[in-house]
Image (cartoon, rainbow, N blue to C red):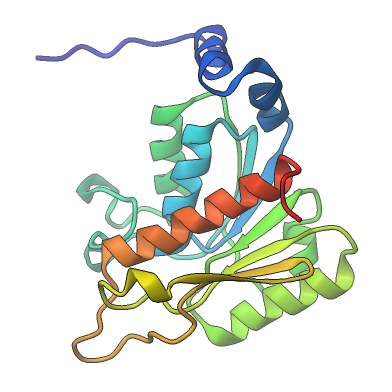
Length: 213
């Protein structure tokens, strides 16, 4: 039987300093990423950013974990029926309990979008509905002069890695194939969803660490 050990913040920080170099690790701890939606994209992006050593996450979702989510989302059987915000916080705290996590159980609207994400450095858009997706992108890009948005579109099905792409438009990055929609024989499955989620997390780091042109 394996035995867990509680590590100190210093031990975790020193490990990240070795893995990422002190300069990068220190910069990461100062950054705040907002994630709109904690389904397949948002939950997996949050886990990747937590493992990378991001300092603060602002996590927004109104929904609860369902059994049908587990084929592509980061949750476990024990999280079914929990609020997604609380469930993903549980996972992140097991990875690094010293990440600052701000949880917001909200439906995102045009009226509250900016207040939900007002103090973040970047927003990962990871919602299901096209209308809410459009609200997030339009509101942040028009009402903020600095916050970039990383959105996902087209990750249903499996295979076809070659058509997953990145489109850059000023402060907006769109990731996915921009084509694939859920349909009979074209389900949402973990591999493709997680590829796009990790591309979102990767793009966020590229921008926040000053390497995006």
